[in-house]
Amino acid sequence: MMWQKWDLDHPEYIHLFLEAKKLAFEDRAKFYADPAFYKVPVTQLISKEYAQKRAALINPNRAAPTFLRVNQKPEYHLSDTADKRGIWFHLSSPTTGEWVPG
Image (cartoon, rainbow, N blue to C red):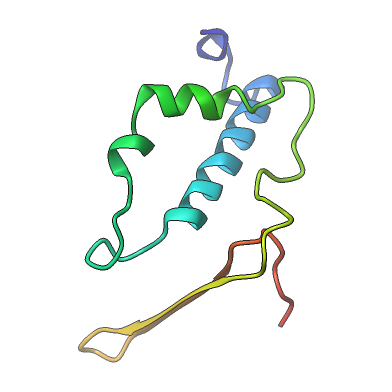
């Protein structure tokens, strides 16, 4: 694989790394759920076939503005929890790729 020859600061390596992260974050946004209540397709997500399909979306010559579906109706994943010490965690994540200022 070509990327294995590149140093970590090589522009093509950085491009590939960032584009792959965009795809990974899209998958995370789509499948972020409590597995006790939603069947996350882990086997599919970690398969070589799925990785090849996702990798084929990367253009080696141009950065994608986003891989998220922009015509999707706005939905939000909201999660709040606290531990026994009272430390809170809050997640508010739109699945449209558009962040609401605030």
